[in-house]
Image (tube, rainbow, N blue to C red; front, top):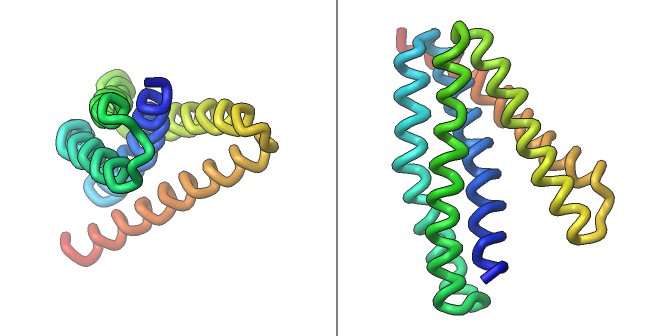
Length: 158
């Protein structure tokens, strides 16, 4: 059962951070709208969590590496973990002005990724600095690209 739980948690947390931050930063850059950002977060929380859970289910089913019980556990844990991870980004948006909320959310997301990456590196007896750097590098790339994409969309379609 541990394999199913770890699969779902690691995937759900990582995807929840990357997808939600990318969407938030892009919508913020393109709209400056709290409504759009909150709507995007909640949409990600439901639709993308379900999509990712099914994706994990089908992938692990095809790999045939988990028992049926572990497979379903990974599916459910992926959905629940991603759902709550995505929803956690609503809190800063409700508490702070949107510009500040985006910064707080980026810090929160990068902190979560750092912790996940550290635990993963330690469990595999790999260099934590290298694993953390790789994962944060990808996250920062997503954040930067979606910011500029949001600005471009605002210029072209506004």
